[in-house]
Length: 189
Image 1 (tube, one colour):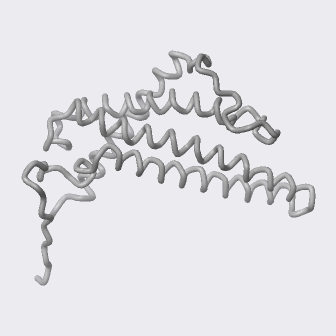
Image 2 (cartoon, rainbow, N blue to C red; image 1 turned 180 degrees about the vertical axis):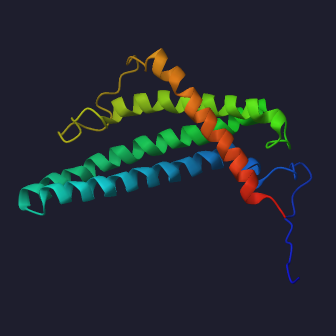
Image 3 (cartoon, rainbow, N blue to C red; image 1 turned 30 degrees about the vertical axis):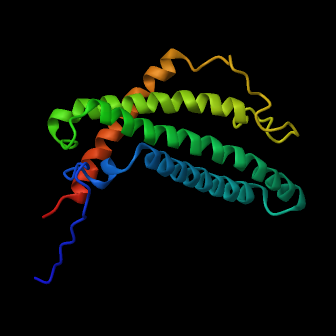
């Protein structure tokens, strides 16, 4: 019917039954996380800026306040890029430890995928807690003239056990949905 099937040539030590996501290195997953976190923060900043301008108008005082958002946005982008890099790479690393290679979308691996996703969500939650503090994303002091990481303390109180435990279920469900959605979008007919 005029369809051409192109097959990738791979080295003999690669798992050819795995999808492209699984064949990517953990470092590549971290890079994808950095891109996703940067996109997240850029879109959030665009919506917040538009909302700010809609609410305050385009007068001189509003514009000077808006210009200070650019310093905050750098910190916000670093915060989200770090958190997403940890989420994506720790998920892939955990998944590789807990699942049977080549059976990533089999029902026998659903619990392993959920555990890997939940662990990744918890690691992201913990990392986000510390980057928020170190980068001063949420405390309102970023607009003052303190240098980046001026709050960096090794022994900052961590997130609560409750919030860390509660980070597990949504991330586990999200990654199970990701894996099975990925299977639907890449399945051959």
